[in-house]
Length: 343
Image: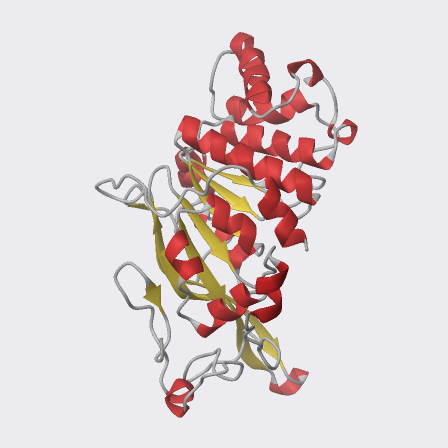
């Protein structure tokens, strides 16, 4: 039911499927893997194992584009976001910003790139320092990166507050004096304070009420149209992702199983997992809702520490063949990429 309410509130047109192409992508993620090793078994006979949180994903984001990343909880979306920002170190693979590799840089070497990449966190209650005023929270990136003079910094903070829909007179208030939606607007203003080219949005509306979710999504779209900033938008709400994204990647168990233009993916999903996700989204028309077929998945999401010789989705897939369990699929295709032998 929440899906329908969000769709009704999202009055902005979907970005559709096209963005003006540039010579080179702003962000490139190449075969990124993030494995967390651990030891299991009795103390005297422990074995080395690893949780494969992200297991070889690749995608690109161009300037002014929104790349949506969707999937079930625990599929590796947030780990991908933190690996892109080098907040956690990747096991292998590459992350390039404007063609320059940043995945192995030290904290000091990453500093010039931090300004170009910012993040909006999922929880607006935990991501703001309760001991700092709104003015100090938004102005902190400017101070860190030596942007503006101390005299003009306050004016810039007030301009950003107005830009995201906050009253500049509240600049001396503390986070606890604001609602959840207002706190997330503060987080957006803080991300914009460094004038970044790319913002990672890690489920920025999942902790908000449905009506507030629509306001924040529309705000992000307006800011993109005005400032030209690119987003990697992470969410599990398919309605929100459809409205804001130009292209969408579907993750399952640390891997991308389908990548396509948003309109193509929602109108013609090819991977069985994507079809199952979309079939679970309620339709506002009661007659269509009663007659349409749904794809039901059996079993549970397997452990990310298991190594599969074939497709990791095969045990839950309603159309799996014997070859699916023996031979691993790869993400293939030109515009609409899918990782499935039968698609």
